[in-house]
Length: 441
Ligand code: CA
Image 1 (spheres, rainbow, N blue to C red):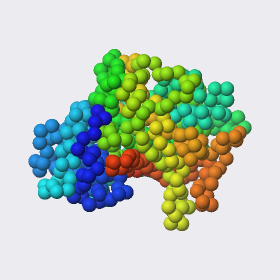
Image 2: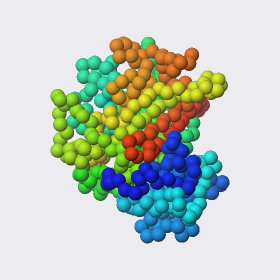
Image 3: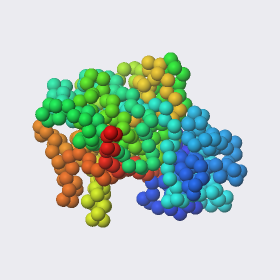
Image 4: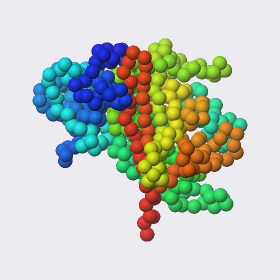
């Protein structure tokens, strides 16, 4: 599953000129899948190439796919989601990737139909039946627990299992639409309980996987087979209402603080596209327990992780009015996560829980050890020795933030780079905070 093949060849270039630009997220070595709509047409599957989209349905209709690639394209374009393709397993998407790479490479004289990204709107790539959010950064957990669990900031179970909760699938969006500040219940400074617009609205920079083939209820997925069930990856913003979360979260965990909205990047970077950017599992401290046997496998230890630089930026109304660019809040790497995605997936199914094609499993906030790799405002506003959070300056602007304000844009990006390979990017995950709706009379 982590094999390098001709589709990763750094010398391969595309006849789509924008795909050869050094800073593009979508060179011919990436070929992520998404669902788009353009010019009043139906929502349909496509592959990103430079600033264009390969229209899979039109390419199939033109007779440019054959064999396994044609079968995969037929599944991808059967409806408005990639679930049927995801259900076919990664050999199918690999055949499609290989055929698309051949059609798009320089020297090819067949010209499949393209749609400019500028003319397309993006939809959810899959119907997400279930969305699970993990908590797998020890740095995020330690910073978050320093004030609330001073005796044990990192819970004792953290190093034994990938902690998670079942979140909400119905409010995941990929279209970049505004995110309304949720209404909710919280405890106020004087101890009284209030209800109204969230006052402590935050983002969480996360990476997520889409499940490919699932498992039958009752049948676990061994760790050695877990990579076969991982279709691909996207960026994910787990918008978080911290005041609501603090009040409602005990003893059962997050509920309404997390379920109002989740934003994802619309292009699914396939597991195969990430093959050149695999990395060893997290190197545990000497005193940490080793993972139990069901969460340990030599291949996962050697290549289970992803070397992926991830960034969060903010673009406030003030910056936009001044014509100023967004300010970077966070620069981190997915390798800081204590558990691999394969370990998360195997643990998820270890009790017999059925995972289905299109299910979304998110990593938790991808915070690293350094101050500049803190991946949410809750951490960014809390200096290492401080007893309480305070507003901090946004770059070298005059603006400060403690929590998100209405009109703030939060933008995520990610990029994988390795010597001898062409870098690939994830596109953007974005959302603008919109005011809370007025409570109905
Ligand atoms: Ca989260």
